[in-house]
Length: 134
Image (cartoon, rainbow, N blue to C red; front, side):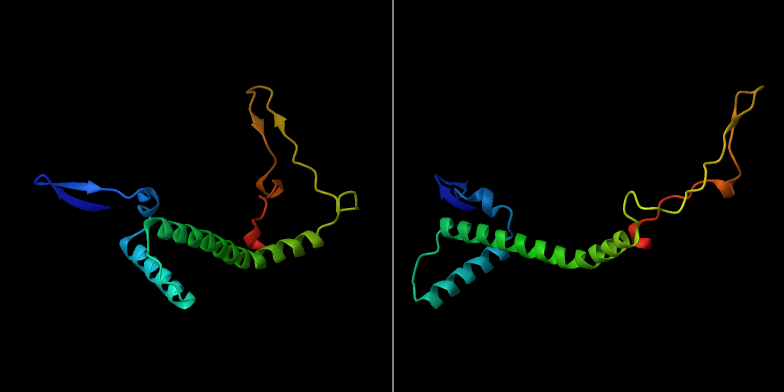
């Protein structure tokens, strides 16, 4: 974004890549410009830094950052996946003989009131454990 003083008034001028640059801070655009200059110097080139080149450079960096973020997420999730795999290996396969499950508590209806009574608390099913508890 730039400003121009025309006919005694200030006007706001937007780049054709304004949508791309609006998601970045001024500092990050400056850093990207400096990196482009370093790349040009290393390659022995002296090209002008245009809005188009800068937008292309930033979009490439976004893809690199997205890949790096995914790799970090994968590395962070690896121990959790190992835990799940160990837990899955410890559980019997479908169709294999598993220990019998206790019967569900009987429910009976009071004839006079129509209310339902359940078995005492000690016989109720427990909630499923979360993966963090394993």
